[in-house]
Image (cartoon, rainbow, N blue to C red; front, side, top):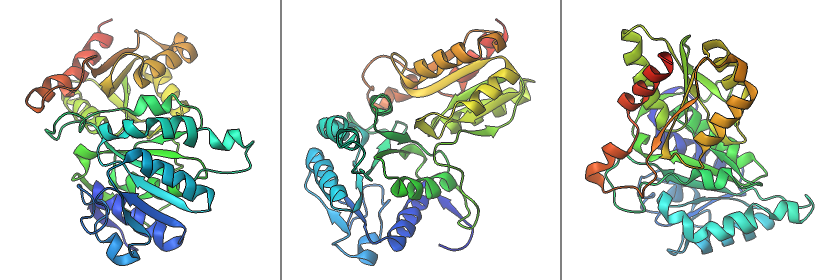
Length: 327
């Protein structure tokens, strides 16, 4: 892709993978049904036909084996990109990721690198069954040795997947699958933002709201509604969950004096908890109200018919905004 286009997020990732594979023949893709089928969400559509079955590999249904194979390939100089078909399927590979992949570079005193990217379609809003709508990002953001990112726009998805592949450290690449079909402009000629840079998605003056992935769309919806009621919300998109680029967030909080942290994942012992604690520690005297959190409830993800009661929506975000404004 050489010209600016309007693409769905899934297609933007596809184009980013294509560009990375064309630029470096060490990049190989692995996963369940990613070959002729193109993955259940068609993110790898037509890549096997273009690059061959030696570089786009259909694997057995064995996530631990997929990650273990990727670790071995990375040791041999390849840059594997593996797909976990659904977020809840990552746990059979959890041991490989947190006890091996995350630690091998440190274990070898930096003499080897682990350029492995793990693509994880995550989150709710698609009406799926158990193990298909989870948000396990905090497990991996908690683990030293792993980088964790989550794009919210097609343009970020296009660039960030390429940047993740270029990293010599393992990267968990969380893709908001509910936004796979949301379109946005992708400009392959523009300079990309750094992989771990937080961005202000919408400027405002009264309250800062922060989130990542699919939640950013919800926050923008809330900001639009609040604007009609006279409240100016600044929306901050984390983009990177580990490491977190806190400076733009702190600058925003120092301006607005108020912060609402939103996420799909459960609220207890979460990324939202960490962000709230960090901001309270580093911007305490700028805060005019306590940091508030909006999150999924501390229960297993519910059946699809009631997922709307579980997932934070614009109304729940706005309720928290009202609380902090009236504190």
